Length: 313
Image (cartoon, rainbow, N blue to C red; front, side):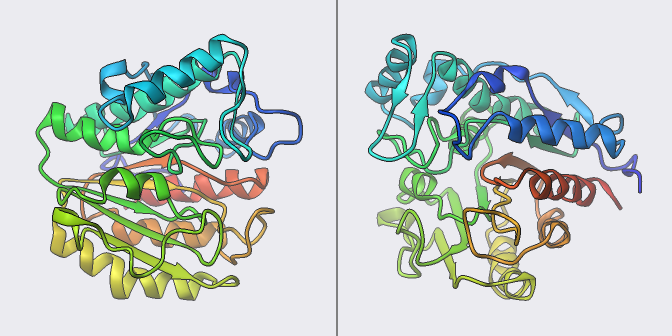
């Protein structure tokens, strides 16, 4: 099935992202992107998408959602040769800073292209991922919060009033929630396995201060499959988004709720991601940003179906 000419899908990728190299055996490895790219070529989507070149996000854009001290700390750690950034399994290598600022910048280029009408939607095939990165600390393989940088950029540089973020990564996006939980102009919605890493994302977490009610967490038990996810979309996600009427919809597109993923216990298939995409793609222009997904074949097939759903009539 070919993509519709009426729906153009942008694709952002760079070999610079492969320069972020955690230790051997780490699940968030460069082969994730290599497999996506090869699969896109094998299934002939590579020729149908609109290739957009990412550019690095300037320091000022990243410190709009992260502290300057944190930004500088990541940079210095990479200059010094890399190493562990947190108390868990988030690593930096000498070229990780370049990859991280380019990953954030890719989302900004996607915003420019979608808001400017060059494409109708876009997918950012980036790494390191971002949704666990809080304002002043790294977590869960994430250095800078790519989708948060993009959301703030859309508001400050394009004047968008309301941005929604749907996070269907199997892990709760604690960093994105943390950054925007007091901001009523950004609606954060997460569907995730619970209880699970990182421990946040309970129903009662609904925002703070002026942002109260602008966070919607949908914790799902281990073993939830397509029926449970689609019910959550139909009964909660879609009605809330339509009421919020966002100018732009950003998707933290983790594909680790797939039944073949080694790091979680959910039961989605690649077709499930297509169905979830179809439910939200007409609410507002969509930009999706790669987060998790650690079975290489399942990841590549899921990205394909996600892109086909964005691009087909």
